[in-house]
Image (cartoon, rainbow, N blue to C red; front, side, top):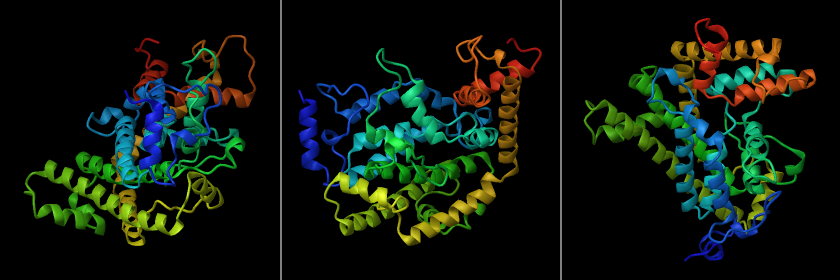
Length: 391
């Protein structure tokens, strides 16, 4: 039988000097007992997978709301795709795959219903009450809202995973600074999750956009990155097989980006010559915008062009705008109902007789709505506004 100590010994042998070794973790806030056969990051991963918030990702959407069809990506499928891409990158760079997987599986736990539309609505409502940030919400879920253990609240994840969740940073994700982590930079493993998230977003939104009809192949020809992938696949596959062509082009897009990332990042790592994971954390602390794991300048340019194309052709498509505006209206109206009379909230959310400040009332309602899935938010809306729906 291979024990935890055996696995930690193997990590020391095969991982790069700059990788975060399980044995070197700063540990947990509460229970730092060690498991016989699992490393600390393997335990973090398992705790996340078994959490209620992780299960809810199945019914939280990205671009297309759940009622539009069951083909489109949900937060759960996106999360699995990010973890898969991130582990591929991490393995090639000799990083700790268990830590990568734990951060990847937790990075979207805090998203509210209806994707970015839901987040925009809650952030506007909570503007002068602290706003809404899904990274911070993810952190609160794993440290506060999940209750699985008798001696403490939260999942009691390792410090490295918590920092990876809070400081997750992409075009759509804003890092959060808390006092207890202000002197600690993220690991390379966390940075790999950031970049894998960006790869997954760009490539898979294309897939969903083409499937929905909001994007066409002609639209995509304005992107040099797409044209390269399309010409490569077109020479091999029959263009008449639309679904297969789409799948292969998206697959090739991911492969192009990943290869470029690995080549450029490998050169960066050689140049920096990090001798330990602590040196990596110090670098990221002093250079919060400095990226060692990154694309080449040419790939950055082509990705930027493709991102702008999606912004114009997909995210501003009238059908997508109808969905997002409808979603925002539902969030706003649900919030207003509970703000006017919070006694309509379930007892476990709003205990009768309790006294809360105005800001606390906003936060309680916000957390309640943010914990909903698309499906439960739609059902809540019907219960509140449809006279024929049972409450």
